[in-house]
Length: 361
Figure (cartoon, rainbow, N blue to C red):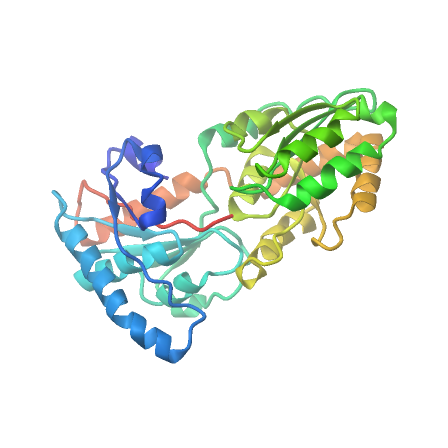
């Protein structure tokens, strides 16, 4: 998103909390400002009242940041979570145009609170739960922005797949891996027939505490395996992958559908409002993925599905095509267009500031 706005000649500033500020080296091309935030969800009334002074203080800090910028702030966009709250409230108080973007298929709690007051609500999914469009100034489905390198994969040829060809599987577990995949995937693959194992190539993300035991399981197979605690080049990994096994975070769904890659999805069961399950529904219903709840994701069931897909590679190819049909490859452009339109509401300003706080996958 920031790259699109920068390419259009706008100035961008990221305002985030302490956690986001720790990743500021990834935003070398834009100024990063830090604001204090307060998590006041799931607390009793007394706790919320005690948190009120800190909430007011964080909004005041955000006002100071917005008013102290070299050029007038033309637009404030929030991307969900508590880091976005004080800056959006400050912008509303200062009369600056605002919008929020919801990446999940369930409107998040902070976005729910802000949706009736901002100038526009941008959604990633056609069917988003807990929204009230009749109460919003404007609602638009833009999709969830992903890197251009991922979007470009959708226009490239899908890797050759067949019953006598290599079958490449990418296993990802969100930003920090997921032990369920370390527990189930290697065991399931180790039970497959040797002839099928020889066709497999696996790249798997593992937690640091899991990687040694996963490596030991794969060592007893004839499979070409690459293990890592962090996959640094997701676009490259997606490019060669026929099938992805992963969670159903908003970014994962957006990347799968933009690139056109079939997936086996295991939504994180403790996600707020069960939003990962909702994220997966459209992709599964459209034929682009197979869905397991975490209790159902067993060694025997995964091995059975993988063996079936290896024998019917056309099903994997077809699912990849179906995933691509669901994708919104122009999400970044659509969202940037919205930001520009809203910024122009209060005059033709050449400076657009984008403020955001992220959600975990």
